[in-house]
Length: 196
Image (cartoon, rainbow, N blue to C red; front, side, top):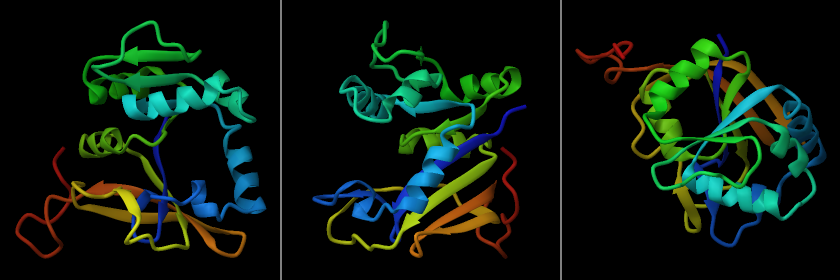
């Protein structure tokens, strides 16, 4: 059964982006970009929501450098607002429940499943107990004033077991965890793994 990996790129204070800042906060270096290239060679299916689909399909349509790999990768977009046919090649639309569809992909598929952006989709898959690994690339910047899209707002309590760590370019951290949903804070009557 393939794993489901949630991937986030974040500032130290948990923002997915910041007003006026370039992508990767302008701090992408050669080691990080090399890792991204190698990681992109792993056969996977990309999962995303409608907002991310609109952004990324527009990027792909621009024929920018590097979109060939994204075009060739199978993609599943979960949306009640998009309609078929979708313009981005190798993309399937799922209008039903995302958790049910991902359970089926995990049961019947043979490719690793990875999210791309899609904060609310990631949260719902985590809440459904479907996430096998939670991977965060944290850039060394705090964007308290300009940050937008706080990643973890609305998330359940989750214990994270660190299984991999790596530093890129002497500053950017990769942290990979196995998540366990918690029913409540440690030491409370409801502490422990969630029954989901």
